[in-house]
Image (cartoon, rainbow, N blue to C red; front, side, top):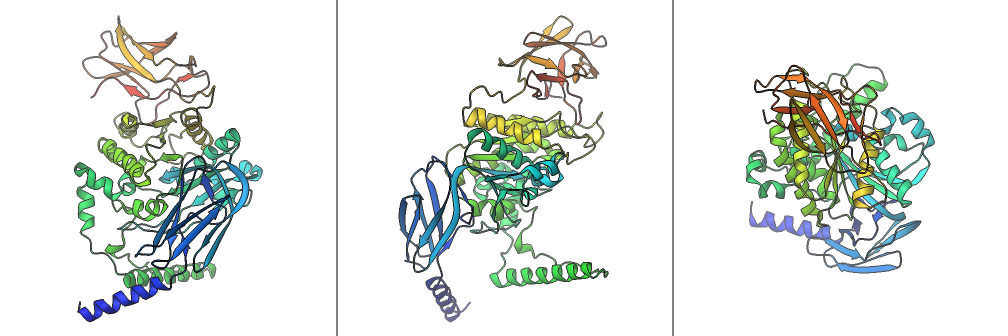
Length: 504
């Protein structure tokens, strides 16, 4: 490129920034929920050198836009308030964001079972009709991949009302509603999810670079030439024109066989390592939040052995980018589902085990859902217990709510007891209890590694497992199949997590 062309481009860029109106980051829109009791960053862009003042709830903070136009201020911790107030940004132009409240903010992310809208849930129609919770709000992040971290994303805040609640993530809705009704403060859910996505696409670029063992695919995609703004705009316009033509044909009941324009390699996609972090999480950083709920893993079930390092990198990477400490990260352990032959395939059982292994990270927990899935449906409709179990984890561990039991029986040890195994569970405030159909799900194996269904009985805080076909057992498993019939709960009806004592 010639020196003259470079000079002209720089002059054009400077002129664009110099005349830029003040803008706010995407989450600061009408109806926003700000995090209580924590410093609250507010940021955006303006002309280089422009003085910016932001006011909200009696506080005022100022900053000067940097050479690239970026600016940021930070409010001192705010107390919870359901009073709708204005957030005002003043520079050469003025912005006013209306109906801003203060409460608890959580990101809800993952793949299709987090995307799954309240409108399709088992109790969805009745709950939508009854929804009258203006202080429970969702910001639905628009789906967009990117090869590089983006600064902005489309989306809007919406309250949980009959005409809007259907678009809420069902899991996030039930999670947020329980928090809202228990804590008596506004709750904001930032729904950033995409169906059919693997964990790899949600990991931050810095997390990949910090973990070379998982970074090969990311290193390869970093070599892809990036699109120019003009080429990206051309593709976006072509796609919009194609979608309009398709929709017009559908409305006119006419056939439409024109293929969609092919996305250029430099755009990235929903399978690009870090692609959805870049497009759907990076624009949210560093919004003040309380924590994250996560429902994902189905797309990684065929490679469960690789999941722990990737999932760990995702969690540690997000925490580093948001720079708010080891905030809570709670996830859904995959439910029962016949992913493949339930007798010879262990893919979902292995993925659940991989999820459990990630609990070594601080301030993490999982909601066990082995009893509320659908063995024949990848997308079970019974989302209420899933969201509410996540909420129990938050209430007990994040908010220290008294008297909340947030987990079913937690495996501690398994020891030989004659021809049987005695399974001990961690001390808990709730007693062990069998399902109405019986204490099913236990299996024993001898040295031949052949698993046999076993009889089990509760003995205080332990379960004694035996099998007539296995006189000398060397291993015991519980609910360790893709779609097991799990029969162990506590008195509150929360299920025990699957486990195995072998490493076969």
